[in-house]
Amino acid sequence: MSGNTIFDDLRSRSLLYDYTDEKSLKDLLLAGPVTLYHGIDPTQSSLHVGNLVGVLLAKRFQQAGHRPLLLLGGATGLVGDPSGRTSERNLLDVETLNDNIAGLQSQLSGLIDFDGTNAARLVNNLDWTRSVTLIDFLRDIGKHVTVNQMLTKDSVRIRMAGSHGISFTEFTYMLFQAFDYQWLFKNFNCQLQVGGSDQWGNITAGIDLVRRLEGQAVHGLTWPLMTRADGTKFGKTVDGAVWLDPKRTLPYEFHQYFINTDDRDVQRLLLQLTLLPVSEIADIMANHSHEPHKRSAQGVLADEVCGLVHGHDTVKSVKLAAELLFGGTEFTGEALSAVQGVVPETKISSSIVDALEPLVDMLAFSGVCSSKSEARRTIQAGGIRVNGRRIRSADESVTPVVSRFLLLQRGRKLHHLFVLE
RNA sequence: GGGUCGGUGCCCGAGAGGACAAAGGGAGCGGGCUGUAAACCCGCCGGCUUAGCCUACGGAGGUUCAAAUCCUCCCCGGCCCA
Image (cartoon, rainbow, N blue to C red; front, side, top):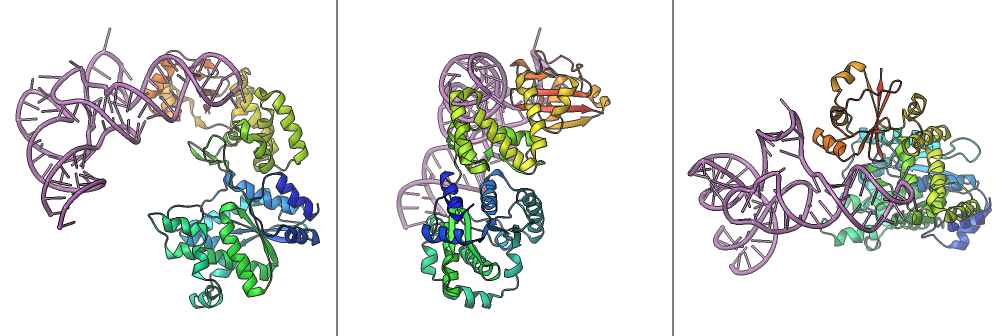
């Protein structure tokens, strides 16, 4: 893929927001493999779907023949990036930070190619900032940046205007990131930094620093913030973020999150979160708009994203489970075993089942209902099904165990599987 | 520091001695319709050993047969004055 095509591909996917001079950036990408970097905030031990745009963008560049550096900001985590935030961050301790970095690292290795000719590479800015002394920093970096300039950045201005202010630590953050860029330029000839649109200020700070210190013009590119048509935050559910870690967000829930994508968002998400060619997405959308009720576009989106993250075998079992939970497939032991591992489950010995016999107990015990009172009410309202059979009375016992499985359903979307052993 | 108004369930907000687990709205949950949607309609919406009981109206005491409602002290917030 030529430099033109990657750039234009990003444009046709609405993945371009701000970028440095288009012509020279395109020329650079055409001239040969370019080393670029993308920083990821290590404030958590797992990526969430919001991080996916950036990681996939790095992958797109890699597939186009360029070399991505993924920066896990160890130093960032210790200092705190004020961008996109209205209040001061809590600082992480080193131990948490290292756990986080380890977790992120293993997830990234599943998504991006770390071998081959243009292998991606993980870097940690703690490695090169740790030994820099305050004097070094003030002389070598601070001297080249004016506070006047720093004050014009949105990330700072917004916090200056707010009631909580901004600490000197966070104020200084952009110099850290600028320093990263300069260091990566010097040591890896990194000439492009990519990030979400809230990173633009930090990116340009780095570009300026490289120009001053190295006399070289390097580049920056940002993508637009992810939004949702219904106004809620992308990647968030009422239960919190949608994580890539299957222990935090079950693959089934992950898949469902995308199945439930609003029609108004589905095309953009296909473009931005999958690696499908733009032309193919056009076909998918054409097909979708003929029969929107079948939501074929959502199906493709969910399969693709879930496949990238969890692998295609997982997608298969997740879809089997969804068929059972929504499709009215018969509740055979075989079908139920497909549900195992993709919805929340409790392993339980049959003696405990006997002890918990009344349905209300099981509902409360499993967390399907938050209290026994709520369980009773929900049963009353006809909201509970056991192995597919709607329960009308709280006194009903839960005898119909199919092979070793007992599936509780609340409403259409909440499930809990008891596995007897 | 003085004065004053206020603090009610997840949120907003009524209630001013018994009829109060506390109006109304929002959020949430369940059902119906639908596209595992939106909109709309219906029901639910503190807990439990559920025809009953327990816990709750900022906190601690008190008055009363009975207190979210009255009294005392304390804590917190708004506004006005210094």
